View 1 (spheres, rainbow, N blue to C red):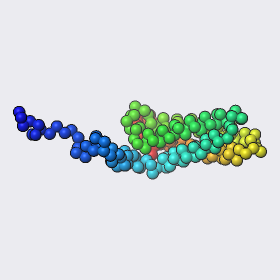
View 2 (cartoon, rainbow, N blue to C red):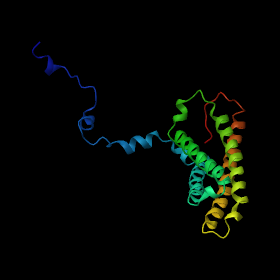
View 3 (cartoon, helix red, strand yellow):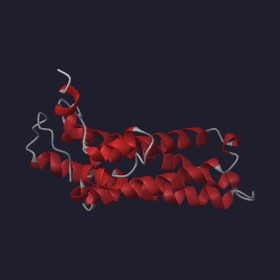
View 4 (cartoon, rainbow, N blue to C red):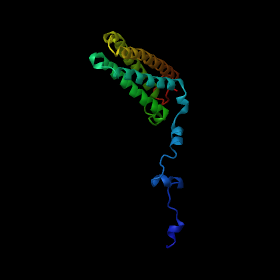
Length: 187
């Protein structure tokens, strides 16, 4: 029994992980791990490009509204609520699809869920855009007129982007023959 420790290997991890367990560089393999987790075919697809445009333009839209004294016109509370909420949800949805989290949630009928999300987003963003555009003249003459006018423009562009995504997700759902039990996501 005296020779037991020298003959038995009780190591459960690879020798390369020793440094990360004992204060070494724990981020050593991070770039390769992230890129293997990403769905690069989705990242290059039209729905992903539309989602990136929605995220970027939505951020621009709500930043323009937030940089003004939007509390003076009560309807801008609705506009900023819609813009920030849709921006957050779209960002989360994009990251979920990009990193394949949706595959682990197979109980969710993704084609119809994404289609319904985009349908609701179009309606909400259309109301926010119309409210924004209808009240641009109330700010006319102030220093923030250009911000509100630009926000109305970007609100229209984001509404169109959400409309295009809704149309593409509808086509994907129809191609799937309306089967809500499948777990595919528009790509």
